[in-house]
Image 1 (cartoon, rainbow, N blue to C red):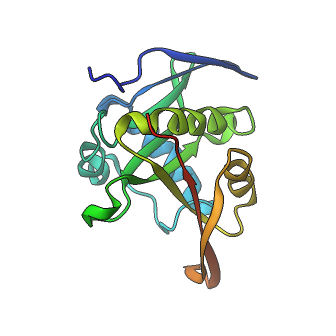
Image 2 (tube, helix red, strand yellow; image 1 turned 180 degrees about the vertical axis):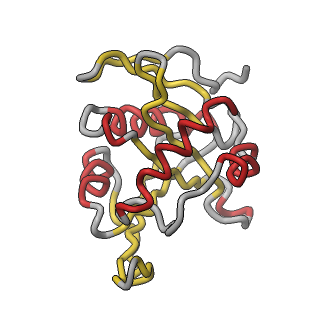
Length: 182
């Protein structure tokens, strides 16, 4: 395991103890279930149809613990959320910037899971050579925008009415934060 691979990092939440660890391929069913549950809400993802484990296997395998990790949050042995890092843009000048995605099981929301995952990303990203993190969030997703703002992210951009969700045009907000180098 690399120096930045997560061990047993724990914190307390309303529902019990949260453990954040590297995602395993065996977690993919739970990860996809959490993701697919957000599709019909039109709040979190630009996907309009649910996906499958098979379709997401290549995406899962693009991650590496020492560069673009994929983490899950567990409670009582159950995956209740996940966060992944991905390359922001392919040009070399953006190498120190990563985009993150964050999803929490609907029954575990508002219990500190998203905050805990995002705090972990902020703390550990510099060890991965990442000096800036961005999140792409729909403008109508106020809970996510508020969480990112509380953790020091700023609005770095707005793409107005860029997403078409069931005939509704939605804004995409680019939230960003510079990190301290290690």
